[in-house]
Length: 186
Image 1 (cartoon, rainbow, N blue to C red):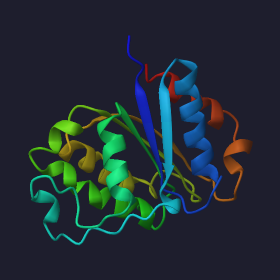
Image 2: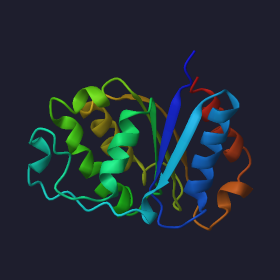
Image 3: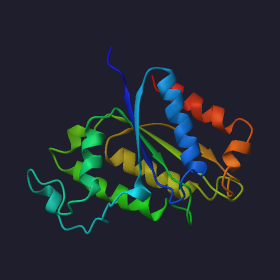
Image 4: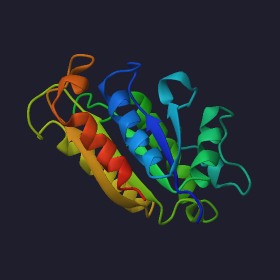
């Protein structure tokens, strides 16, 4: 049996913050059940924002920008599950995560869609405010994006009141919930 491959896209500009910690726990849980994992910290990569130029629709040309985005496309094509991890910034994903999502337009073209269609997607988010109201618009953005790309939305881990760094570590059950989500990916 082939190992399932999970790829995480870390959208926090803050290294080793709550979102990164939760995403790593999901990946740990996935490795516990035999999955192969990989993660990319978007903050450390050069992913130029999409300009809507249409270049990606030209056969054999993934993007006009020769940056790390192309490497991420290749990693997605070789993966089974996508984990999007971002804190909430003004009721949406961070700017670096949004730039990455916009660049997924490459999978809209006829030869691009089969590379992602039917694959699983997960969302992890942490934010400072109390309650779900702050995350609802962002969750909807991801739901619609996953639906449009014909990905299967297989779950999320959404945790409020996690503003200060390391707050996830101190939240009872948060890390185990993340590991359990990873273990469920078999």
